[in-house]
Length: 110
Length: 119
Image (cartoon, rainbow over all chains, first blue to last red; front, top):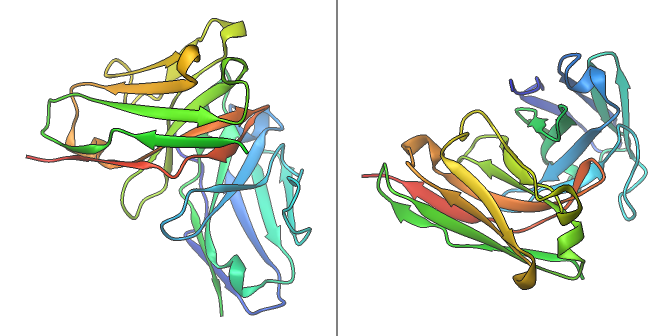
């Protein structure tokens, strides 16, 4: 049950694109198409932004997109907005109805 | 509106026990799987455990870090899930969230309750 690996921080100017990677193993990210991404603003509960690798819940802007290749999943934020500044966590199903999270990435809007 | 509200957090000494509650509304609780996730101050999210729905016999599973010390239960008549924490350690200090599992993601979260383990 090792945590998934994410960069500690990424940054971009308004309007730019940023991509956050999430690396796991064949027992989690690589083994299932069940990666989700959560946005967390300070002092708030996490909010799902992407599920099942690339699906967006209703109400999430389409500038958020997800993908996966092998054992690495990615979240891309296109057209970065000031309100996108937050912590982002990936999460993967790891079999037997257990889950593992990434360490989190702080997105800074310059 | 789907809601989850955690309660029961507080300050306890190492080795003591604490029971958290997750009161839910707005959905059919007995048909839902519930997960517990925690977050130490300034740290990332950590999956703690889960309880599957009635259809799956309320099966539970836990992270290695809490296996044997934490127990998840639920009372469908009260639409409430519980996290019984025993033999608490200082490293269990965190905000504890409950969340509803929809398919393979956590679609609704509570606001969390804070547990502090300190002498």
